[in-house]
Amino acid sequence: MKELLLCKYGEIILKGANRAFFENLLCRELKFRAARHGDFSIYRSQSTIYIEPKEDAVCDIDGMLESALKVFGIVGVSRAAVCDKDMDAIRTLAREYIPQFLAGAKTFKCEAKRSDKSFPLSSPQISAEIGGVLLSACPRLKVDVNNPDVVVRIEIREYGAYIHAGQYKGAGGMPLGSNGKGLLLLSGGIDSPVAGWMMAKRGVKLEALHFESYPYTSEQARDKVLDLAGIVAGWSGSIRVHVISLTHLQEELKRCCEEDYFTLLLRRAMMRLAERAAKEFECGALITGESVGQVASQTMEALAVTNSVVSLPVFRPCVGMDKEEIIQIARKIDTFETSILPFEDCCTVFTPRHPRTRPELSKVEAQEALIDWEPLLEEAWASMYHVNVRPDGSRAFWQKRD
Ligand code: ATP
Ligand code: MG
Image (cartoon, rainbow, N blue to C red; front, side):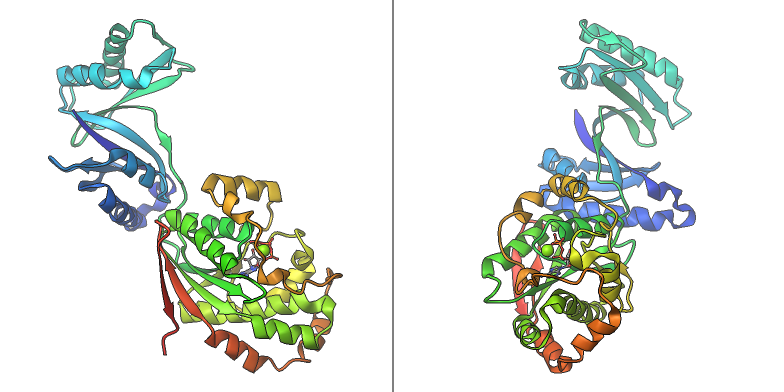
């Protein structure tokens, strides 16, 4: 018996003339991820991508399934068995393959779909036939057409007859790389990994920028951020994390400016550096985990003050979400437990006791004028090093070019 995976995709079916472009991106991503699970042929036909072990190849179908469920653009994956387009063969396969999926069920129904119209039986006839076969193989089961525990599907397609029971929910969204590249400002918190994941889900390839402030922030804090990048990379593919030190800049801020403005001035400096990095690494947008009203630096007025120093679009996918909703996603993508590890972030170094929640731009600019920014920003920029974080969590470090 031959088992394979059938991947269904959602939104991109609506893409008309561009559809092949999206389908090819999906196939490429699946091929890339399949390499470590065995030797598979991956091809598409009739709005489905087939992942099929090659003849005699040793393949880890379970591992492949798990990987496929993390590929954005796929809405569902079924484990299926295939046979010739012949009613006897389909009956035998149904009897051998399907009962394992019906073990805990009380009711089921069969749904056949015949994309190959030359097949002699109609879809209702196929459903009735295979329903009969399964009832005799599992006599304690009943058919329930309205609300069955399991739906058994028989698909008569271009390359054969496929039979499966149950579909795993895929990651949804758009294929990676179909919507450009964005620079994620990645802290060790809960929100920014979620923000990155949400944009990757829309097909945006990620680069990340992290600011540290050693020795006020620790090496463990930085490692935690790389761990988070590794978890997100399981969905988004490898992420290059660029790390910039803000130690001196923050010390100067503390020395020269009014405490109430620390956070805002720091965030403006971060945004300036982020925009420079985005241009350097060819990213079309910045991505942050900000959410309106969550903290003092995220009131509408504070966000406007931070935003006004950059011209690139800033995507804030969490902007309208409650913390609880963000946490729900963090749990789903498995970043939550890492995010709540108690390490400091450079934003929490020298936190003002009374941060401005309704800042006026003119006052912020007056405070900003107390510092000679250029050399500080240059120094921060020159401190940058890079880490390539792969989906398996492994890392490669390198220092700035030039
Ligand atoms: P998070 O949970 O992601 O840390 P937060 O609610 O704690 O977010 P802030 O610390 O104010 O909020 O940061 C807001 C956003 O600014 C973060 O979501 C992130 O995008 C960015 N940011 C904060 N600190 C850093 C940092 N050290 N390096 C890079 N980006 C940062
Ligand atoms: Mg934070």
